[in-house]
Length: 609
Image 1 (cartoon, rainbow, N blue to C red):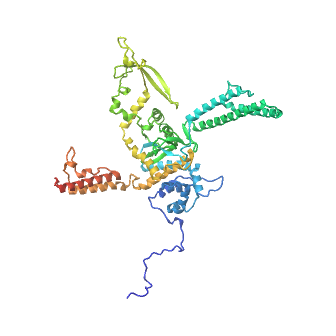
Image 2 (cartoon, rainbow, N blue to C red; image 1 turned 90 degrees about the vertical axis):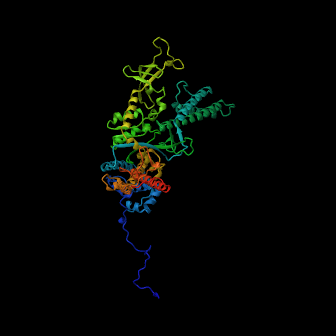
């Protein structure tokens, strides 16, 4: 029989869990794992040397370094709201390790995110991060540039279009001039010169009307018993025109303020004046609806963001020059500038050649792919398909019409960029002084041709540089991946602050948090001296040797090519590859072995040596 009472030395297997147990709290007792993003965030912020004495104002309750660490960690988890970051600092053990159990309020966090101090810290962190990656050999001299649109914190129906403002401003001036003419005809006795009227003189005219109304009020009071009273009729007309002119003045001031806010932009939002209406890829209505947004430009290398700028221009063409100037000033620009065809323009090519002579532009132009098509090369209207005689400087089109050089010309675009052209005119008469019909337009005018030699030079240079380099093929998976991680992984699709400066500071936090997350995600392949980098290759070499030991070959027509039967081991990689390529090779080999077993069961010719 078992004992009625257990022995005193019997040990129970139940854990000792007691919420009322007295314990000694040590804030630094917990430490995250070595590859945690908090480790890299702590190391980065501490390397910035941001100890600045607070000479003026109230003493700081929280260290800016602690706030920056907390915000970067929260953004790396996709937490953007200030209230959620406050809760994150209270409940997350990793955040408590970074903050040393300090708990800033959401107001403190919100003020810190949009502060000038944070912008200085973020800019310094990008430079420090670039120097660290460069010293470790993690990045090369290729700078991949691209842009994306991010929604602003503004109402999508609060648009103001500059063209409509200009149109309504002219109509308002015409309305004011019409009112001045009516005042003259209505016998309102004020001194107004209709011929020299200007919209800015409305204040003077309104003051004269108000003075005249006061005089009429005195006359009406003196002649109160007169009926009908002409002073009352004149006062009635004067008040009517006073209200109308005052409305014109208010509209004039409104249109003037709208034009000043828009500047060189075509639109802006009433909610966020710095936001511009742009067409985004996310268009659920499928009607090309424009929304208030900002144009984010980034420069990456090895999928790390090394520089960024927030622009108000909808197109990428006009953003390249200020962005390159910003990168060169921060000393983070590589020797190879890689961008898509949206950046290829004569102005951008000229800037890179003149100002950045040490850099090579790997940027195609918009019609580069079309020029290689059969349709383009067979089009007789394209000048590139004509015969050009450099010695005598003339063109001959496929119809045999000769175009001789006539003069030089130039054009200035709306952004005041000058383009120089050479004008060629067709020969109207042949050797027998007969009119050549192919040299005339349908209206009977002589045809002429305009050629931009500088643009043709930049086009040929772009084709040559792209054909001699393989760097451009890395563009899609280097810079486009960052946008995917920013929007899909971090969920950063819309700003939570308003204003260009504040939005720029917020996006800087998100991009640096993405860098920290990227470093924590692949810590073993940072250094080129790491032995673990060769692990996938060693695994495949071992797997390939096992196949060679079994001496397994496939001689079925299903896997045969033009050169003969395919050996299973030939699908194994011969060079170091990424994990994705490794998985692809494994899938191929497994598929081959499966098909081999099927052919064995069907009686196909399989030979084992």
